[in-house]
Image (cartoon, rainbow, N blue to C red):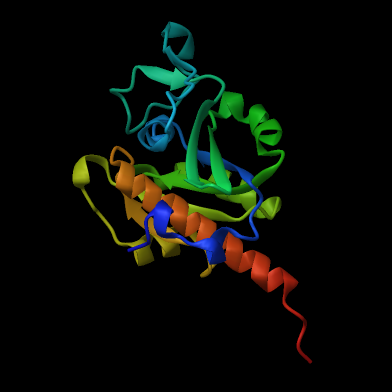
Length: 203
């Protein structure tokens, strides 16, 4: 589908800064921590804590009732794409009570991945709105839990009403290659937008 990181070549990475900050966002329980962990070349920093009775009535567990832990700050990982390009991945907390952190985490961000769950697509809207309002390029990655693909990319695009240029992919974030494909699609989207922004205006 997309080339491996090692085969991307200079054309895709030559105009990208050497260290790139990427956010991994999305609703509660969509797989952000799992994605960071699956692709990171270093042991990922995780701020997962066990949920307690204090979260009852505060955190919405609809569709993820079996989840027992939650990210309370951020996840962090790193992956080297080439000698010139390293991605630093920051997974955002999903619960609404932690959204105040998103502004700080987004500082210096070149792009973002919005993880979506077809069982709860509505949990993706807050992340999409956040990046659209700040004009941060993003890709939508539908995490197909247990290999189930309940709908196609076009159906997800229509349901989320994202711009036709925004990449929408089906993935399984437990699988390293699948998560890598998502990051490659995001990088290509970032480069495409950068080229459009610098292209001379036509009359």
